[in-house]
Image (cartoon, rainbow, N blue to C red; front, side, top):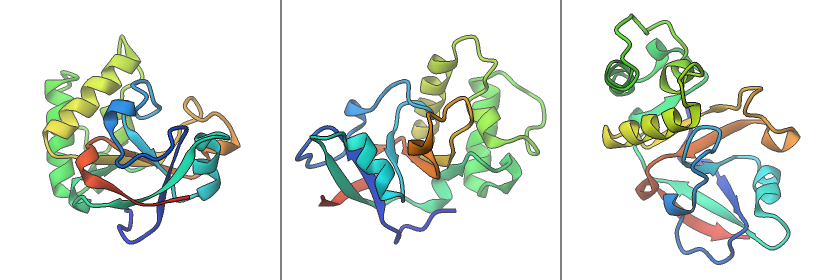
Length: 167
């Protein structure tokens, strides 16, 4: 779980942003299109580049409507389980029991014909059903070195984040 009271950071090469928007997001990010946050300031600093800014971010969404990608489906909140089950059936056309499956493998299946497009489609579906954030450690395939250690928080609905400070 995450704690809304913790300090979260977003590093951006863009200076003086008044809000964080998915319109600036990398559509091929490791968890699909999202605003990526971290609790580790040095990670945000790396992503801000030499000329960018580090933003402190406040989370505004309901924790019941988030998904921990490091956990199995059965360990998610009841609301999240219902959405993941629908996504599995309606988007990935899977009718098998997924409760003991890892949430990441259900939401972003690596065997999808177009993996990046599958992540975009899944995130869009999750957002439409009320999920506003997915989070977890990057897999070895997604990780690009020490700059990406720790949990990555991927906000897929930008109405639930607010810049609370800039460094």
